[in-house]
Length: 155
Image (tube, rainbow, N blue to C red; front, side):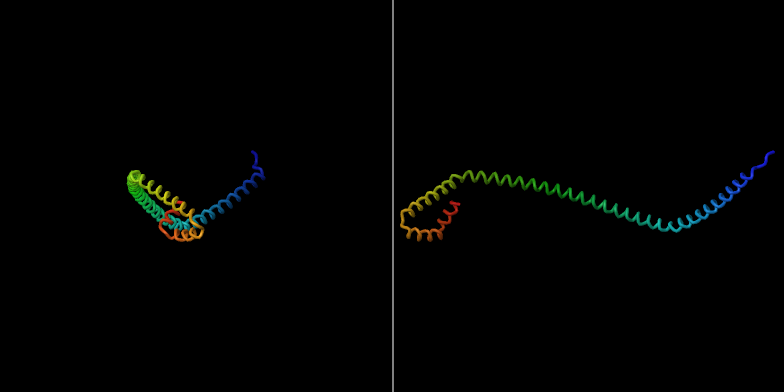
């Protein structure tokens, strides 16, 4: 029979020694990891509790936002209806005012024409006066009501 070579026995012994050291290191690492996980467990529980509280707050805010959205939608619908009513009323007033203006427009045009004629007559009379009389009449004209109406028509 053949004997086991020496180099094979040396390699096997080294492998056995390295494997034993590796398992001891692995056992120490697992024990350290278990201690670390036990230390983290209360922190994880506290984090989970605060996260649940935060989720509850977010849900409460979401419900309030939904309530506000419903309220805003109702308010917008209400204001929109009122705005339509106001616009309808404004159109009615404008229509009535335009009809009234159409009725009285000949009188207004006649009054404006009469004021222009009066102004033309006044200018004609002033052109016939001497410069001294024109200056006196100009000062008096500025203070009169007719003068202010004429100035308004010129502008």
